[in-house]
Length: 103
Image (cartoon, rainbow, N blue to C red; front, top):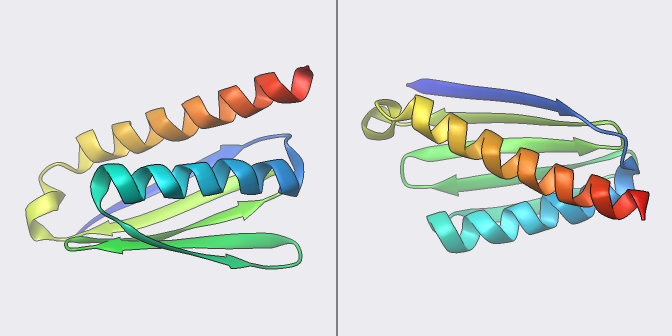
């Protein structure tokens, strides 16, 4: 079973990070047929995601995103491509929100 771990620091604060996480969750639900559940907490949230062959979670805090995913046997062969796509999407979403923050 292949694993993906990704950490991204940010300066958005929790409210804006929640917006990024919600948009990310909506995107992966549509694009990759994921089922996402967002568990809100006082100081951080957790986005749990799953579909056949993939399960994981993303911690969303005021200062960082921490994603962990496990890929089943069939998708494990594509771990590098899947990780690159997750990085691209998250980095893009963070950059857009950082740009909005500066306005």
